[in-house]
Length: 481
Image (tube, rainbow, N blue to C red; front, top):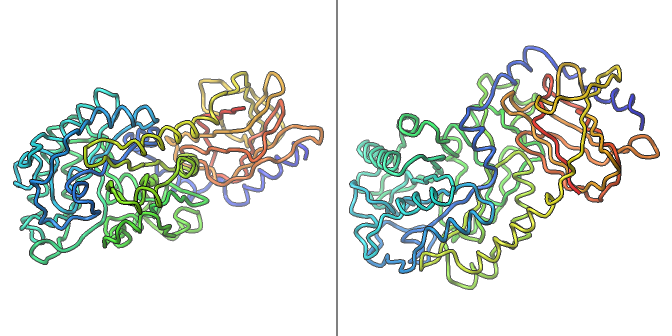
């Protein structure tokens, strides 16, 4: 293929209104600073731990005898050391799950860790360990509370706000408040109407840098718990599809022994195409997050079915990492401590293997690369290394290597400060036939990881944008052998 043919292919995009009022409307939807920070974290951890761990169940009923809670070897430094060493950038703890048992020294209920033989404030312990090991700290606080007697009344929202305030003021800076959509009956048989806007306002006031995830305005659930992303994972989406009530309808509402964790749900295959967005007046920037557990359940279990038959392997997790982090989503990987309060040796071994697999493609970056942009008249202009990699009119970036290189992996990132713009692209290598296509993809967003099926040898690669909303803005392109 010749260069002028590739340029012609890129020019076909203009037939789809590269510029115009609708494109301007879509690309004006841009992320907040807190969202940008989260996208750059890429991979962080969930810790499900509590009375459910001791009782070997996924969902407690709220009537558990908390005197049984005494994890004798609990070590939050061990959690953080292992998670940090295996690539995680932050930790989110289940400060309260649906059973209502609180892992911090709350003044709002006796159903908490300080009234157990263990007595220590685990949220405080973990917040201090995260600071020590340079990990960001976040909190999951279940709105559903199967223990609290006021649940199902207006008074419960006041109770919940008071608990939120405790967590938002006593444990340092939080990077995330994470809410799922579970909403069942409380001890009085009633369901609660959650005052989401009041929850959000409290968090914005007390923790303005924290993202509010899933049932919140900042980060959206990928739609399944198996790490499956869409072919085109858009971050600019209709507001109506991501209101808390809509998320709740699609969340897990019953305890099926953890079976739903492994299921793949197809929740709206298209969330952000131009054809879809033109039907919606209000749009939001809401990046995707994939929540995945290292094993079948969210809490640690000591039976054969959970620990051996259904645990994900390191390869399973690595595949999920490349598809999520490499497909415009973040990865929230759950690693539940065992009854003693430690990350089990089996999970440690899996995490170490997982880390080796996800680091392997990026061990050897090709450094001596010069970048040029090519416009529709075939004029070339060398890029300033400190600037964005696209300006008005260009449709192709040429990467020139100082010598022939073997390339196995390519990583491309858009500059999301200017929204998500690229709709489709292709990669070509220079060879004896001119240029040969080696990859064809759709969106890029925060990161696109391309692990080529077959290594290629070349001294030049073309990155051609064949579909875009306005001028695309590339943050960086990297090549690895």
